[in-house]
Length: 188
Length: 188
DNA sequence: CGCCGAGTTGAACTGAATCAAGAAACGTGG
DNA sequence: CCACGTTTCTTGATTCAGTTCAACTCGGCG
Image (tube, rainbow over all chains, first blue to last red; front, side):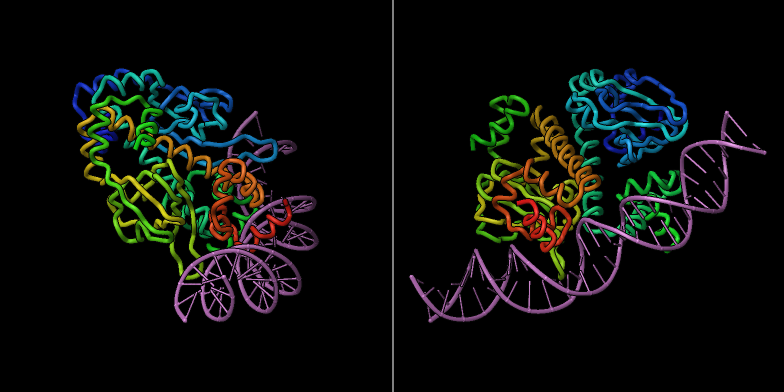
């Protein structure tokens, strides 16, 4: 649990009371490999911190899933758009390995926003971080070739390439598994 | 100036004092058509509300600019990543037509965050909105063909297609002007 | 051991890029 | 307000990155 506190303190040093209040709301939850954490159509009711494991974000399709994100140990995640809008999620969340989480419900988070001075500040800063990530990704998709996107991913998030099956990485950078296999051969 | 207040009240009804404090910081500024509002390398020091006009976001390149966003009348904009991180912007902001803004400096905004109860709340909600937009765009770039992205843009933001030169739209959806010209011919 | 999903490789195909040239629209100065 | 130069848009021909379809290999698991 300390790693979550460190996470927050890095954003902004937290008062002990605020932290007390916050951490009292956290609930531990564990999932086996390949478990669905959230299914398309459900409303996301959690903001989760990954104690251990990897989570994949994907839109399920008959042909081929569209994988568009990953979250790792030490990171927060959520189907954030569903969480914010309270509308059904348009995608699934899945544990790629055995995964242990600390979870916060939507209502608890709203209470935290209201009760603690730091709530909105943290919410804002967390959201700003998400925005910056998406912005980077947008530019990568617009201006880089498939091969450049792969090399870029390798540079920025080597853990993705080390730990995640090729087919999901291919989908993430917007190409077919075959194309990625050829890129790998070419550059290695 | 009322339209800005409406903007905020839509997010969250504002107290008159908070609004007073906020609006006292706003400065009016006007730019002619094609003016650079911010140049790559500068640190963005403003959050701006568009009273009138259109703003283009682009990465300047010898070959061909990469246009990746637009902002219209009644919207807030900023080179938000530079504004947040206080690092030089990696892109330019340009007025596509004569443009009138209400601007807030970084320091003023920080003061607003600290002094008013609503500051962080608004900051958070504004950022959440930006995040949702980027998320949509990511999925559009990943799962739609060029033609679908064009039709999609047409549906979601017809004002873009009506008011913005083809070459910028082409860049925005990630193709060449030639390709977009052909798509237009095909579907009309 | 055998099966099944993941990864690789090959061949044919295709959407979009590139190169090139002409037409239309736009803006600026006389 | 017209004339000219510049920029944007269109259209054609060629090329290329990445898709699709298909067959084969590899590794893990029941």
